[in-house]
Image 1 (cartoon, one colour):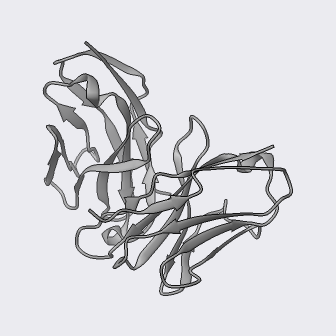
Image 2 (cartoon, one colour):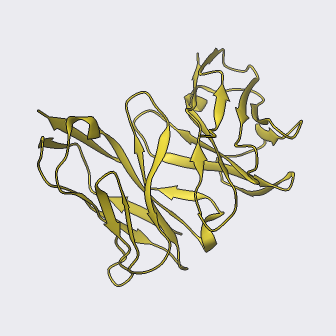
Length: 114
Length: 113
């Protein structure tokens, strides 16, 4: 069964460093998303992406964040200058945009900012 | 804005007990409703969904019915197993489900033998 994959599974970085989180969505899907979950808290929407542009973003997704689909298969989330409060589990999701209305999630990348 | 409210956990049950996890929502439009499950150390998996009023989603013995009149989507299972121990998230998506998911806080379920 097709699945969303994410790399790395765990990323440790120093405050102020740039990180890139990578995702490979399901191959025929058209809509892509990033969510994050701070430890013990709810899952929060960051950004959605369709047709090579951002379709919606949350207040969390400020100028320090960017997304890209560089090669038609990968979908990346970049944080330019990480802060301590960026420590969280980051989930990528994709959707076919069909009548199933279903978003499929990857296993997540745990980002730890020291 | 749109929101989802779930009953607080943790919920602790004995094996074969009946499970209900309450979920209510606030939405300006006509959302699609979902239950996702997160097993320890894993990502989110779709458990079931419903896209219109009175629809019943079901999977692996879990059920939830989309109740527009009470804006609810309560999760139920008749007989839980130890393997059902996980965190359960209720979520909604506006306008056909292509848009962002808005999650509840999650309810941790622990099932003991």
